[in-house]
Length: 508
Image 1 (cartoon, rainbow, N blue to C red):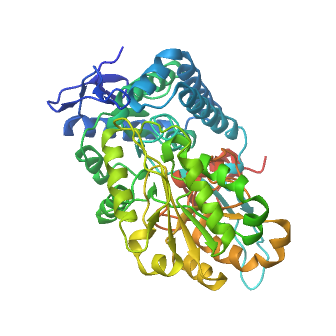
Image 2: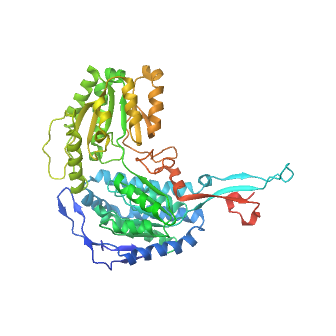
Image 3: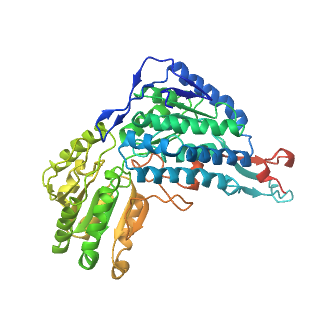
């Protein structure tokens, strides 16, 4: 049953007067549930509870925290069809996507629980003493990590489960001993409440301290602003727009005690396709990329929004075939009327620029459905117009026809930071790709060969981040086991008695 209340620790509260509803974008109708935005008092209570909980939770054993994470996964699975139906009603996404994202969310939780069986994540380093070293003795130094403290997590619009209430930010922070206060995304507040209830039940069943998790309803930006500015919040996790992430980064920097904001933001994910790849497999890649551009209605942060090639008859054929294939895919509903409106506005702004040609046939679509499209422009126009470098969040991509390899490299060098970059090539191209690889890896966090950027594997080798503005700190990943490094800090112990050292640093 949906109450519309926030979770403040283990209890639900709704003392405020600001209410809102979620929208079923497929039906273009408001859903029945009414949600109450958290008040300033409720926000402060949740954070103060998290701070008190932190003093106990940071010292709870890894095995007990693993039990907590596995219990959350169990509770999410126990929600069954109720969760799937709510997810679909609030996002317009199909049941298959709901089930897939739920499985990923559960897998992430269990993966972090498994990670806790080893001390590898603690970045342990031990340098034993050399008391007779000359001219000065060497002290005994041992290094590990400590959790930062309560973390504010912002739910994302495009992943109601895997990047939201119990998503990767929450799971990784809880794993290393940080309580979490979630700002629930207003587009899927019902899904958030169901997941929040699962986390609370898991916390109670495994004996976690109250305040280890809270979920705050929020319609506007005020709740998020208060979270970031609160002195007892020690880090922020965010997935969303450049504008939103930058605003949080600036707020955090203005605090008396600045805190890190780990924001995953905009990316157009450039793809370079070689002449040989076009000549030998152009049709195959046109079909593959038509599917990747429209996957999830283009509402992925890794959507391939930019394709680069050198002018040729083969590139023209590829571009035309891509434009033909993309409109044969059935249009799908977008997450929210506001997202559909923003998609239409941004697409019109890009395609209205001088030198840009839309190649795909216009589509008549239902309300809130996306009309996917492919456009093209020459390299000189792209280089001279920053508006063509902006992300169009939806099923849209622009093909840039470069004069030569020198211009292609200049374009790559002048791109903003990206989450991914892709190279499509034949084996015969390999000896000539080193310069392109070198330029691409300066601009991206993940470099792909002969594939698509959509699809982010959850594993230790994954890096989901990149130079600004794709993320606020390119040294860290938002996906995979190493994402826990965002929520800990290094600490060294010098000449500490063994009995006072944490287990991972003791001689035994």
